[in-house]
Length: 432
Image (cartoon, rainbow, N blue to C red):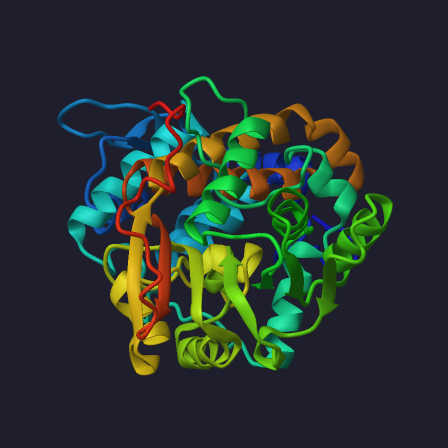
């Protein structure tokens, strides 16, 4: 069988298999009935990931592993190659084979993945992560050059792509559902206000934002809180979009979008904010980020860091880091303290919005699915399956309590203008 060579895949996937090739491979393998060794390999995989309450079947449609208790959903290996790829490199093998249509999930994708993540967490921080050679995944280094390349890989896929499934403000971070029936648009606006209230912004203040996305928070701070903002980002697509929007809305005098690395920030500010950037910084650069904040923040200022995190240091998901977010790493709170402790920052507030992000990702996945035909015309079926796995997998990880969403507010040690209560964060009208 000859596979037509195509241009490099936008996610760096190893080949454009497509559904036709996946079916052909499965059909070929279908002539070879699974043997006892194949079934033993499936059982070995199940043990490595903590024996989840999810069945695992081979290409003969028979379960090779079935949990003893409650069973919800099924993972189906369509060919022997997919099975072996998971044995050799569990996370990359599973992700690539799923993307290529060589592994399927029967049942709700988020629920099945969440059940697997729960069992893996129970089995230990490195369960299901070691390759056949015993190696653990490590994220790529975020040098200035590396960071720019990593960000371009994900965020420069195109504004038209992200516009298909994000909210109207193009906010690509955890929403804040301050009311049970809030829409995604309402929850994202509530998140922007939640951040601004924690920073206690006042008209006339100077704000620095590191990693500004498409500019929604910077414009919101300037428009609704009367501050001036310098926002830094290394994604050309995002900065171009943010600058055009600021000009269109007449906000050019209040907001400056700077195409530059956060490490080059040299100006001072009353408030420093970073929402959704720390995941791309790398633990080895946390002190550099802390030094930037210490250099920029005035004595009575506040800083807020909003980041995906973990309960304990855990190796990064290799497939997510290789295919979706190169250089990414979600830290524990202890690891995050490398930003604050060396510079004697006082921690003012810590909040975990884990379930808010689980719901946000569920909504993104639903919107992505509704836009699937348009995305397919832009990329291909393999891209769609990879992004469904990414969005569903992240939502599942938050539901399973294996990853967290931290907001940490700090201040210089001599700052006594700190709030006595948390009343400024929660308006009286807010309900659970």
